[in-house]
Amino acid sequence: MSTQSFTSPLAKAGDVYEQMRDIVSHLHVLRESSSQQDWTGLLRDEMRSSKWLPIAHLCPFTRRSYEKPRGYAGDAVILDYIYGIEASESPSPTGLAQDVFEFTRNSAACRAVRYRRTLIAQLVDEAALRKKSPSILSVAAGHLREFDLSLAAQRRAFKRWVALDQDNLSIDLVNATYGNAGVSGELGSVRDLLVGKKQYAGFDFVYAAGLFDYLPDDVARRLIVTMEGMLNPGGRLMVANFLPNILDAGYMETFMDWHLIYRDEGDMLGLFETGLFDNDAIKMHRDPDHNIVFAIATKAE
Image (cartoon, rainbow, N blue to C red; front, top):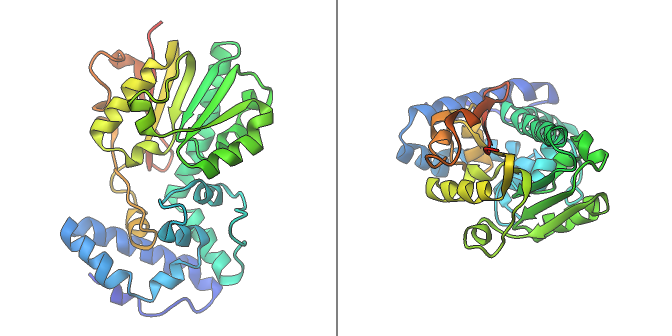
């Protein structure tokens, strides 16, 4: 199968949905039916040299992921695009670019990211119901946009909320946007946590939204142990991961240069050290489109 079957650029806005849907589906089939070596070669030699790269890059967050102005894909500005929050760093798209953007941001993967934001806000609210004034920690917090969806957050029904991220620009925005609401944005990395440079304790909800998509198994296991150690008895831990074989993976890897480590429920369960949590204390949950799996674990009282 070849990308040469897609020989015409978009002629008008009305073509966007059908042709973008076809290219996403085509890349999905091609990725699933190819060896890793062949897929990587096709990415480099054929797809990215096709006329479809500039078409896909009409979408501002597709282009931003590919260009990586902060040095990595999936930065907090990209998530703001997905959430429908206008990014100050880039102008809003218009015309055909707007149509490509709307198609892309309403893909199944992007819907899952918005669901993830909503679920985290709900888990924060549940923490506030279980305990008066809970303490909350977000690891790799980005812009902490779940804060805007949480009733507990709006009511300041928490004792402290720490947003940890390695990107100083993200931390600056968190402190400027939510600092007056009681959030403390702090600069720090996964390594800082694992080597003890950053040490935390006494939290009732500790979570990582998109971080585990990038962590190899050994690092992910160590981080879960570290996060569990931050919890009060009865506290909850939540980590999320994109599932294997999602429809949008081919598009993401081709036109966004965005590569994830994919895991299913069994893989996620394997990240939890034996005896760290009771097996019945670890619950798995998927978004409605089956793109992301969430592992939610409760520490024993």
